[in-house]
Image (cartoon, rainbow, N blue to C red; front, side, top):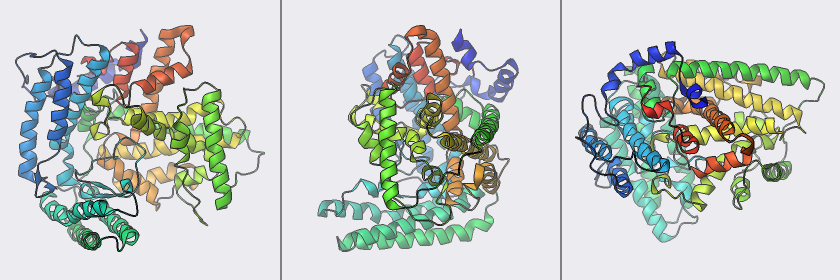
Length: 561
């Protein structure tokens, strides 16, 4: 059947994978080697799973000590030991007789627990990654949660209403006031030798200091306690950056997790059926496909004048708003998916504002300033977030953002896929040169993904990954000294699998689309498929595939151990 063809690796690849992951084959689901976790199921109640999920989410946060989460070595060792108890509780719940949607929820909880286990055994951000201790986030992410590992106790300053009322000012002063204590603890926790992660932490804390400075200007005079807390946090951030720089010469170790650990993480946490080697092959193919397609588009459009960038604030506001209108009319009028009443607002609210520049503005602006419609397709992220807010999922487990960026194959795969899919569906038929921009987007995603893979394979440094991504991004839109390329490669180094999730997730959605078309025959429509996809929530694509097709992918059935 099509399912078998979709997820079964070749015999040679399967043999390599089996050998590489052989030590893991003795692991009980979510357990430790040689430990069956429980003597047998003791519950068949879905309500017990929901109760466990709530307990688990409380446990996942480290212990609070004097208002600061405890990431010290002893606290983390204790948490890792206690994790086995939660895994045992999960293993004692037999979900085999439940409806598929509830079995999916069981897998969601298991993958989250596997994620914490990976944190403790391998990635250990509290001991390896200085940027883990960043607390200030000034802008909303376009995905369900922060991208990459984030310390508990983070502060989303964008969630406050300004000017601050007295209660909010007091709360913010208290939370920001904890930053010096957090950074004092971090100096004792950061004991591992990951040179690139250490190096990138310096700039991260310079960035936090600058963000705090902007906040200080915004709230100046609101509260003396808040003013003082911000200034103390700025000093602590600056001193922490100086400390990182002083310690940098002693750091010479690799920062990637290694290919074998990457494979385990993909299979057991993100439920992606492709190994490090598989994904490298896929990304190289995507890079070649996109660059070749770009050259063919350029040939077809060779007589057309060059696309001009938007040059004024007036044109920016006009053209970006027109792009939102055109895109929403296309989605609705061409029966792409059922447009909801809040989608237009969700997308229009994020069009931003004009930024004057003589040179490059940044990669994505270079695309959007030539045709704002291109990146409105990627704005599907905002549809997802609006859906989570306005139409909470029926499952309590899916109403909240999943931990460890487990949603990346769905969230990033969907947003990235919409760019090319809408091009194929006819969105840019009236603007042939905008098709060139879509292929540039694909090429950039593939080039940066290759960099991320090579860093995690410990074959490239971050400098080499940056240089490659910059060199292979067409038209010089992302130079090697840009904040975009450095920020992205740093992020992908902290979060294994995220750099490839844009195109790997897109491929998994395309595979599911093919399977549903095969199952439904003449009853298949794009709108039906998209509505089904949205109805499952933001969970890994392998779980969505199981829920929509009724057929359990091999990665969930244990055939890829």
